[in-house]
Image (cartoon, rainbow, N blue to C red; front, side):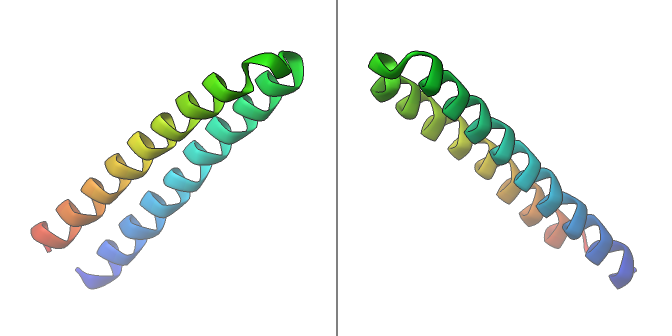
Amino acid sequence: MGNMIAVGLGLIVIGIGIGIGKVGGSAVDAMARQPEMSGKIQSAMLIAAGMVEGAGLFAIVMAFITA
């Protein structure tokens, strides 16, 4: 059972990394296209990255609770 939890936690961390990477990459692309909007784009990016991280942390906590 412990090995399955480790695999699940690894997949969660990979998903978090992919999600934050996509958010950051899209934000940088948008800032390159419209530099005058960089402040608003950066704020939205930080909120979205925080939501991805929060969902990932929730999944990790649930994995430990169900173990």
